[in-house]
Image (tube, rainbow, N blue to C red; front, side, top):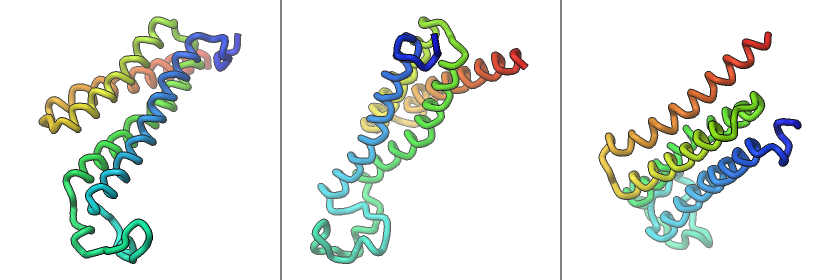
Length: 156
């Protein structure tokens, strides 16, 4: 069976985890936009102060950092650090045909870790609390990368 076949349960696990993470990544961007619109603040670029349908009454204070908007933006940036690496490492991991149990545990744990990291960030937990799920997710991606590297090098 081809590793990237939908008949391969490891690939199905990856597809589910990857889809959840892609939706989370894209959803966080939209959450930032929602917060910008709701608060009418947190804009980044001077040209955003040009009047238009989305900002009829712009003012200079809209370019100042707004914690409500910026918290969502920081979560999104953190997702941009972690999720793309997972998507690549996970796809490579599928190719080396890990057990379904190992793939399920690692990929499921990554998804849960990212969701817990977001919850910790949204609830304004201190760095040490946020660092736990971040570290778990990061170590999972590192493990998958090392696993792929060892298998690939053994085939040379």
